[in-house]
Every structure is written in structure tokens, then in C-alpha cells.
Length: 326
Picture (cartoon, rainbow, N blue to C red):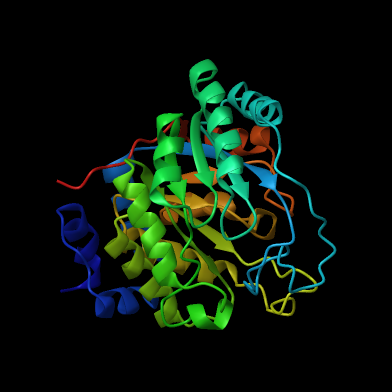
């Protein structure tokens, strides 16, 4: 099959192979741009969805993820803070709700929360979901099924658990937990009736084949939303001296993700300031959502800037519901 025909085939339901995805990665950028844009428009029109994150509990994480400023294994200067209160979470959610953001995600450090901490977050979700229109998301570690059901009952709609990188490369990035544990958490979240958000970080030393394998892995997991983070090398972490990926690497990776994950929301996440000069061009390569505002321990772009940029690109700012596979 010729590469120029792949976009139409994908729109019709064809799943591209690993070999085709690798060939696509090295295809001319114009072809990637045209095909990825066609696929995105077919399933999502011109919509751009905004979400935000709350650093609900920070620092002193027991895990050794090499990219993370919050790991206690590295000296990054990031402090520790306890779980925020219900009122603090609600105030943050309301601020974003009132400015047109569609999703509010509470993110906590550590492999998992205590049940008492889960109950606090459940109370926050109940207040947010009953008083505001913003949707509730969460990235709360490797929770069990009962805790996820409790959160769902109180207003959580989507659960986030990044795979981070490919199955083959994961052991180079983290040794304190496994992808199998993440898969189990995602399975529990699905069983609890939650949508799934799972993505990756590119630029950690992975190969092109690894990047393709990430997309194929996420397709296997049938996720609804995929955040794509660009590594922001943080001083004190083992990846502090990694070179930042080039703009064309980012474009190619996102385009291939769109071909492999045609019905998945592709979301610009961490590293926004690193790609500030060209991020709006990524709308043409498959991006149709973004995390707006600051990240966990690094700066982002403002809500007003993101909305203004999307409007200038003739995009419609609106919430995107998952495109279900028939």
C-alpha cells in the first residue's frame, strides 16, 4: 500500500502495522501533515479541548523515574507538600472552569494514595462535579478497584496513568514499578467505568522504533486520550543533560501517533514552553487538545494564550467526548 493512501484507509477503519508506521515516520513532512490533518478532521472536526492539572500532593516520591523532579532519589530542589484540601481543589477548579477550561485533573506524587487521602479527593470531586461544569480527571497512582469505584461514584470521569515510554525501553526509565502494574491500574479504571488517559514522554533517549511501539501499545490499551510530553530536562535528574528533541522529531512523532490512534484525543502536555514557537503548527499533525496553565513543577502557557492561539488557527474551543470504536 502506498503511504499517500494510508490516511483514507485509516479513516475507513484500517489499522496500520508497525512496518507501515516506521515507514511513515521517515516520510516527507508534507505527506505526514496532510494525512494526519485529514484523519484528525474526519473524527474531531476543528475542536481543541483544554485541560488543566492541580499539583495535589508534591514531592518525596519513592519511585525512581529518571525524568521526574519529585523523586526522592534525586536532588532537584523540589519541596514536599501534603495533600491539598477540598476547598483548595474546588477553588482551583472554579478558576479554570470560569475561564473555559474543560477538564480539571488532580495529580499526586507517589505510587498510590492512602484510603483516607482518596476520600478527601472523592469529596473534592463531588463538590466540583455538582457545582461546576468542568469535568473531573485524576492521576493518583496505582489505585485499587474499590478506590477507583469510590472516585467514579463521586464525579471522577477519566483516569490518567501514563505508560511513559515503550515496553522495551521502560526499564531504562524506571525500576521501582512495572508496566504490568500500570496495565492493571488501567484495567481497574475501565472496570470502574472510567475513561482512560495514558501517554508518554518523548526525548528520553528512546529510538524511533520505541516511539512507534508506544503508539501501538496505547492502541492495544484502547485509551481515550493520550498526552504527549516533550522531555524538559530537569537539573538533578539522570536525564538533565538530554538534548531537547527537534521540532521535526516532534512533528513526525505526533503525526505517526495520529495514524495509529485516529480516534484518540492527542494532547500537548509537559514541555509546552520548549515548543512555544511552533506548537500551533502541531494542530496540523494531529494535536487536538492541550494542558493549559502550569505543569506540576514547571511553567506552561496561560489559558488566555492558548485560547487566543487556537482561535487564530480557526479552531473551536470545546470539550471532546471519546470517539467510540464500533
